[in-house]
Length: 77
Image 1 (spheres, one colour):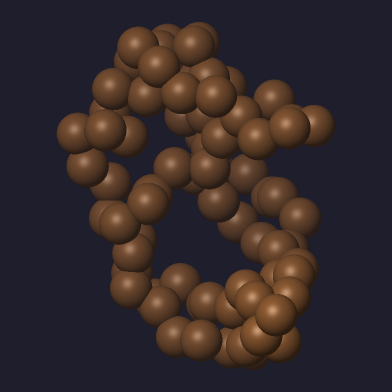
Image 2 (cartoon, helix red, strand yellow):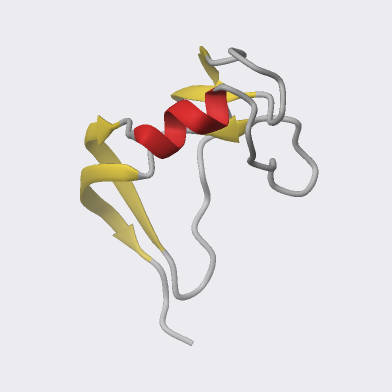
């Protein structure tokens, strides 16, 4: 899937790139994004002020303000 990512702590590193499709675990859902918003927090992360990538990655996906449709629900624990 296509995503807007940054290299945390590297100023102005935002770029659109391909990232692996997410795979929901038990108790999680898969949501297809319809609209994604960028806010002041995303701007500050892109300026290198803070942020960290998930374990095993050097990229952090931006756009935590979103609207989407549930594609698949995960099993409840």
